[in-house]
Length: 200
Image (cartoon, rainbow, N blue to C red; front, top):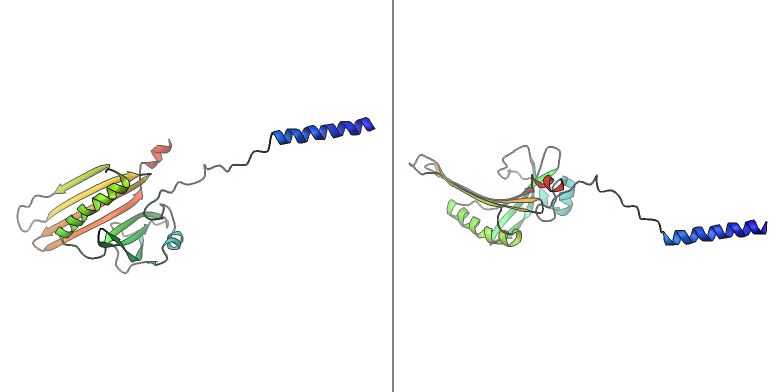
C-alpha cells in the first residue's frame, strides 16, 4: 500500500513538472471573421454605422440641403463645426449607403466659389495633401474648347492618392457659359476598390 501511495505521488510530481515546462498556450481568436475597415477622414472608418459616426462627431446632423451628392440614395450626416484648411472653412459630410454603412467622406468649402477662387483653392490644397499622403497616384486635367458664348466651358482637375487602402481624391471643377458660372472643390475619402487584391 505504501509503495502504491509513493507511486501515485511520483506520478503527480511528474505531471506538475511537465505542466510547468509546457504551459498552456493562450487561445488566440481567429481574425478570419474580422472585417477590415480602412480609415477614411479623421477617426472614421469605412463600414461604420450612423451611431458609430455620431459617437465620434456628436454635432453631425442631416443637412437641409444635400452637399451636391451624385447619388441621392446616400444618406448624409454633416458636421456643423467648420474645419479650417489653407485659410478656408470646410464642412465634413459622411455618406452612408442603403445598408447604413459609411462609404465615403467629403470635405467641401462652406462658401460658394467662383471659378478663379476654386482653381486657386485646388492648387493650395495639393501641397498639404502631398505632405500627408505622398505623391499622387494620378493627376487628370480636362479643359473643354471655348468656341462661342453659348457653349459651356469647363475645367476638371482630379488628384488621386491611395494610402493604406484609402482612396483620397481632390476634385476641382469649374463651369461657365453665357447663363452663368459654377465651381466647386472637394476632397473625398473612400475605401480603395483594389484593396482586396492585397490580401490574395
